[in-house]
Length: 148
Image (cartoon, rainbow, N blue to C red; front, top):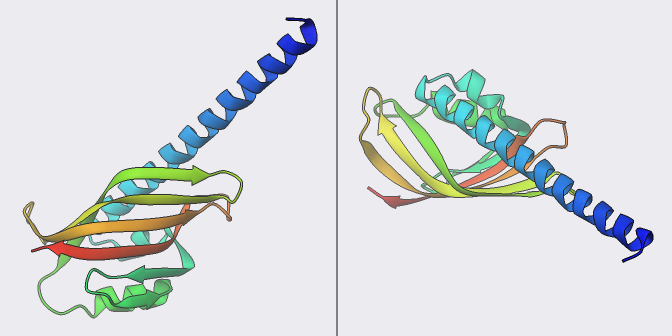
């Protein structure tokens, strides 16, 4: 192989490693955001939890209620009837598109009553993340209740 071929081959290798490392870093950032969001929910800190979403985020609850924006989500949580609950989302997969600055997350969610470590409800969820602001934020989430 001549020096041109070797150089091109080396540059392609560096590009692949850079893209892979960049995506790994983005996935790690999303997973850190998800963990921080879970902790905020566990601590019933809705104000902190709202910082992990865009202002215009859409949330479809496990029962099918569509909420548009942070304000509507906050109102929904504050006006919830019944015992106080928190939710934990456990990702199974995160895929990042570095060109569009969008990411897909999917996994399971479980709902817990305050002061309990035993789930009373749960199911599957998916989330769309965006890095348009420079920070990974949730733009939409879909929850489907599958367990009681």
